Length: 78
Image (cartoon, rainbow, N blue to C red; front, top):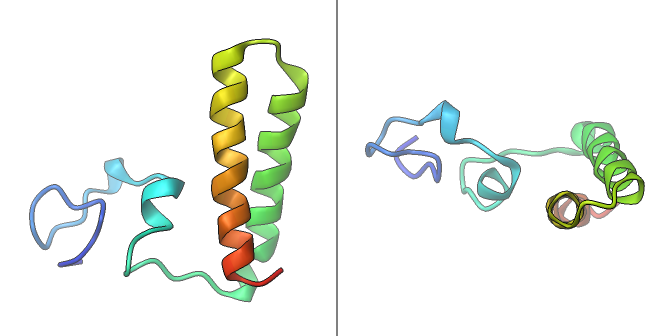
């Protein structure tokens, strides 16, 4: 936890500060091929929101979520 990106106090993870974009850059973050389904589902949810809204902010946020999710899937080489 000493090097946690979510840490607000050295050595102590701040679980309320966790989010996919932060966790995906953390040296403590572990993802294996067993997690592929979770990330594929996450991508599909972001994509569904992106395709079903006219709200530009919502589109922007869901597109960012899709990009982060694709990075994770690419790290897993799926």
